[in-house]
Image 1 (cartoon, helix red, strand yellow):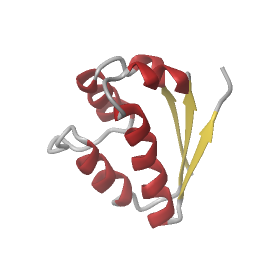
Image 2 (cartoon, rainbow, N blue to C red):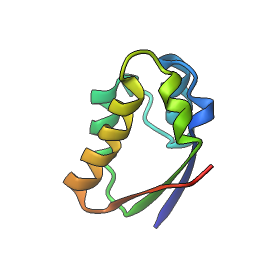
Image 3 (cartoon, rainbow, N blue to C red):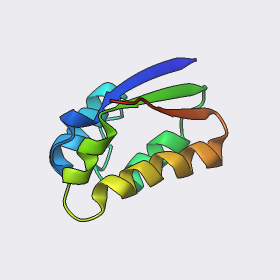
Image 4 (cartoon, helix red, strand yellow):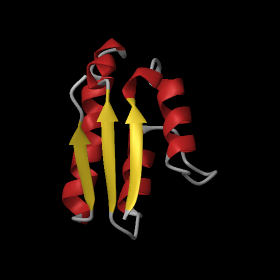
Length: 91
């Protein structure tokens, strides 16, 4: 099982968020750097993975509801695949 530790404090803008996720998750070069592309990459994962999220409250600083939508993207991908686990660490 793959383990990913994601520090939401590193996701200060949409651009920073997608760059950080591309590096941390080793997303393919064709990753479109948007939530739809992230969902596609997550649901393409073929082995179980657990994602630990720290500093989740930092996502509230993103414009509009982008932080909430990011969390929903991970949750929806986890529900669809059945092999992704999400763990939210208390800060």
